Image 1 (cartoon, rainbow, N blue to C red):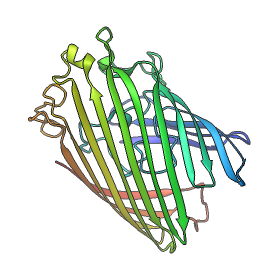
Image 2: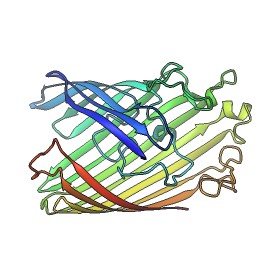
Image 3: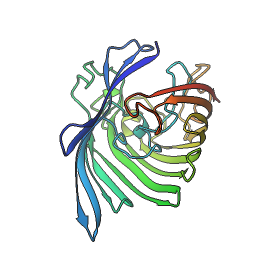
Image 4: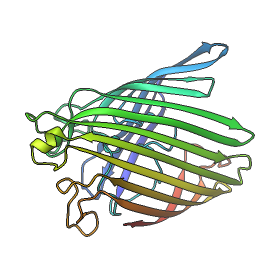
Amino acid sequence: MDQASIFYAGRVTSNVGAFVQTTFDGVAKTNLILDNTDIRLADQASLSGQQFVYGISANNSPTVSDLWNTTPAWSLPATSSALAPTPAAGTLIESLAGQVGGVTAYMMWNNLLYVEGGLHQPPEERAANGEYIRPGQNRIDGGAPYWRVALQHTHHGHYGAIGSFGMQANVNPQRLQGAGTDQFTDIGFDATYQYLANLAHIFELNANYIRENRNMNASLALGLADKRNGSLDTVRIRTAHTFQQTYGLSMFYGQTSGTADNVIYFSTDPISGSRTGKPNNQAFTAELSYTPFGKTVSTLKPLANLRIAAQYSRLS
């Protein structure tokens, strides 16, 4: 078995709710781990005559508290396999799931403007999933500020949102101390569009772009990089059509490019390696899905859900 998860999602008290996922990974053969987790306090008031929702989130990954499927924690495709090839290079904000703990404050005004900000820090040497963090895994030194801002609007069945997110972190490469830290600054932009006027035909378009600037002082001193300064750019685009909330076709495209580094990226691995020392790659995924129940018209909604998908992936 590739993977199995158990979820708790819903209200705990009148003002506290939680989304907690525990996962068994059959490929890595790990024990049950604490996966995506978001525990939050929420309340509402009136501001300038408009609804004002505000609260605090305790979570274990940057962007896991986000409302849109365009940021790293929830970016689609939701269906994936650890056996499928994936790009070897990625930005810091995309790689911290389950490795940090954070507290953020958020607010939504007039169902239009969303703002969130807070700090993420590394856990103790024993990770939140009960296992010791493996040597070689990068570790954030101190707190890493995270921010998110977005605008959304619905008009006659057309929904759109645009936003920005990011974080800044000082990192001990491979958890090694004594040589200072590397500095990472990630700034992302995202957009989403949904056509919902006719639920027999739902169309979606999601996209995000992340720019990461790096200062690799510590890695250079430790022989873990051959360039002091570098950057990495990632682009993710998804388009989808769902018919009668049952049959879906999704197309995904991803691209990564950045500064070449023969120490960080060079590898002779035939799938994920780079013989040129460049992080550049392109990924394409096509997905067909079938949802027999779990729709708005299903008898057992939302208690029972099922989604079956077949996927093709290509990495170059």
